[in-house]
Image 1 (tube, helix red, strand yellow):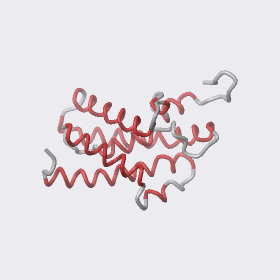
Image 2: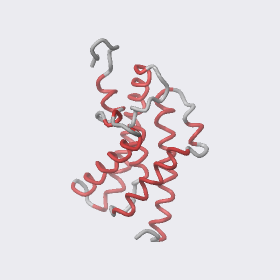
Image 3: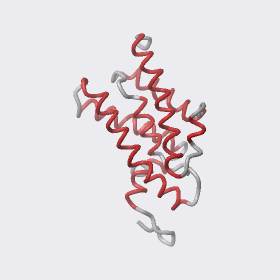
Image 4: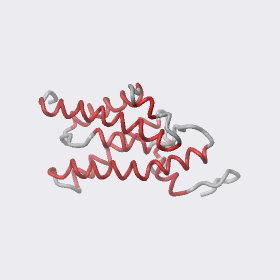
Length: 165
């Protein structure tokens, strides 16, 4: 979809990479991406799947977002002319969804998962930081996959130990 006077854009890639325009919200587009991803998951889990299937639905959805998100992020990064532009938020959506796999659908767990994921995404502990160095969309998306996996592990410990209300 070409902009008036701007370079042509690959429509599907921009829709995916910006998660249907969420990446253009300000301030903090990554936080918006995570929040919208969490909200979409909550709605889908609450109204579209049975509780016994939440873990599988979240896993499949996250995998699909990663598989489609990497090429979309590669294209949008190239068409934007920069490295890991802030309007690409499919990585935050996918990472947040990974963080929610097998997490009870209760507000305490959802909020804690959101806070932990945003913290790991911002701090980028090793080896997530090294994943950023991968070429193109892989570097954009996979560091957030790592942050999602860190959050997933912590959330599963908390769920197992029943430490959250």
